Image (cartoon, rainbow, N blue to C red; front, side, top):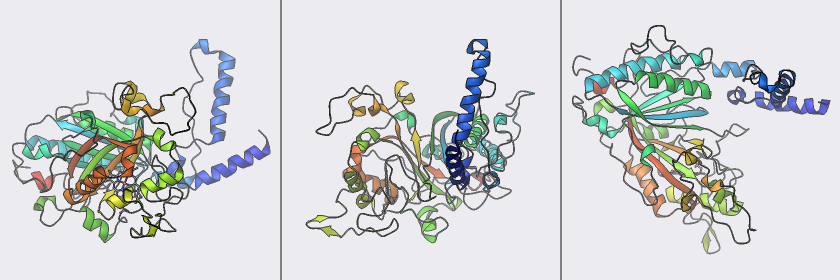
Length: 463
Ligand code: HEM
């Protein structure tokens, strides 16, 4: 390696150091080169036949102190509201939905009490509590996370509509909790829909998310069975601004600011809700496949017209900067500058907190027979006129998209209204298919001596 190369790597390393939250998962190019050299060297010395590769599969990234400090940050689990909603979005998430197998409120309360203790501990970076389910001598199921930092882990819990029909759940269901209606264009797969309990697990370290998922899963035998999981990440730009989705657009610009009165008015349960639900909210989940092959063959100007904002800087087509207000009345000759079917015009001003994550499952799910099925015409993309003849690489079957998560206190007036308007007319529809769907009442927060769901279940059967 020559000196120029090293300088370049140092710049690269400095740039990475400015991104503390991403640093620990980013191997520097030098580290990667080092790993290649180590593996090839060992192979040359010992030969592959002698039993495999060089010892050690993981290369330690050099973590600057500020990155270590950022990873050590703890988001308290207790409070008026659950953590993971009005919380700066972490970079990784797994959503887990389970079906309850318990038949009454008392057992549900036991499960929620156990989960509360587990969540409170793991979000502080501690091991989960012992469980009678673990055989003597077993290590706790998460000990592969030993030594990892909490990485701002949050676990946010919601209840699906069926839970409120369990015997012994005597307090009324949240007023606005109803199964979502069908929307035109839906391509839902039952395997990614619904569920009784939802866990939104978020952290700045994917292994912490994975460990938390294992900790939660380890508490549910005898109470519930896994229904679906979805995992995603955020594309945070180098300038730390609004994340970009798989179409390259900044996504989240018009969200209410964290900690603002606007967010509180949009998200937290309204006064006419049952008293026990104060501090709670609703979560609408949609798994949305994004047809990147079609998108990539679309000209940038048209992409911008589809959204109504510029992909380059996120500015509305009528403005100069990302946070300029879109002007829906502006015209260019006879035509509106922001088209009548542009995504932001169709959903403009409908309040909600979008806290979504990108997913990329490659072709794994497709080839495992899941959705999208690569043999269906739905996975084919159309070629623009003038495209030369070529053989196909199967990129129409790539399963990437958005784990769309919308928090709000009035699903009818928020998500459902927006989705109806979008399903009816939205230039984005050609590029997306909704394949999963669920709605949950997200429980209020809990006090230091309380537990998740205590306001719903307390006082019934001695709890
Ligand atoms: C994969 C599917 C989707 C993509 C790629 C997408 C992309 C975008 C982008 C790039 C923006 C502009 C930046 C911003 O303000 O965040 C936006 C805005 C927005 N989107 Fe979506 N979106 C998708 C699905 C949805 C769905 C399903 C809904 C709700 C039904 C929705 C509701 C909104 C709302 C409310 C805004 C803000 C509009 C405003 O007031 O300016 N989006 N979306």
